[in-house]
Image (cartoon, rainbow, N blue to C red; front, side, top):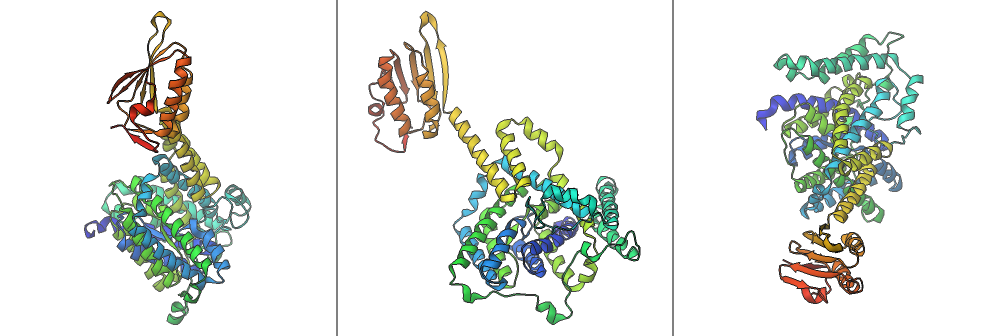
Length: 530
């Protein structure tokens, strides 16, 4: 890991600048103390980063849990009571890891994962456009179509025209220019420009711009358009920002319901992010998913014990890490320490960073996730890949992350069922001489009740007086439902003057009276023919 420090430390700085406003924004959207978001970011970086088997994944508070947290804090009677659910949720995640539930992550179709990445990229762009122009009505990190301010994603963009902050907009364009110059030109000029990342330069210039324009009537940026890290007056007030769980409510059934909800949603988001981040990792590392659940569980226990929000692996920070050249888990650990050191030592300096500068950084992260060329590539792959992809993208943009993925997964399952329906058999007309059709039907390797409709349709459409060769030599498993269809067809075939030849590994039978008797079957869900 230490061999890649030259890659990991610069990447960690970028992840730090991406994570800081997201931690604060998600805490605000969750109705939690702002410092709670920073705590979970620190724990996600240091604790989860150290325990995880992922080399490039970054963990912290997630926007997908904001609505759950907001509701739970109110229903459980306070933040301290909610922290008990966070701790218990971490314990449940440990149990998931022990039970090896991480295998679920491997069952999401590639088209849905690509749709998730693209949808998140589009959401980042759409949500950051208002911040780029100084319209900061919605907290950073929000991902739902309907915003807490009462607007939706698109109405918020239209609201820019009445709410442009000139200073924020200028700072944003300066930052965007620096980032584009750095990534497209200067990064190719030597090691110095590769070690010193463009986002760091953009943030430094943004702070200088804010300081120099404070007295300007046109370009001054108000505090409401800057990063807002809590600033303690003393060491005691810093310690006072930590909150601790009230374990006296542990017997409350509602606490356990919230805990299980957090564990389930956080685990699902983590597994989806693991699959997505591994897919865009240029080194093609494979994250052990069960170990990831254990790491996330440990992180949530620690976070809950000291007042933090629930933690998941998050794709925005993970993709920023990958795009910035992170090579090992040291990048995510470094970013955690940077969060800790900065809020302790330089919170006043952090609060001079314009949100529009950070929006510029996130706009490029979003663009790299949702490049236009990907849409054409998915379209060219055909409808079986493109339909789940586009449904996932649209679902994420017009609802939220989990609903969008659920819709994409549902469509993906329907596509699989259609493919299964179509591929259950192969039908071939071999000879039509003398007005008599000789038809060969070959069943697939595995035929289930999903294939009933397709096979029944083909059998019913056979012309009268035809000759059917029914080949099951390659079939290993056959549902009893299919056997019943064949049994009924054998009876009807006599009335339609259809002759049947049954070909199997057990031999050839002309006009079988009973398929069930031939296979010596008893009613079972699946029958082995091998």
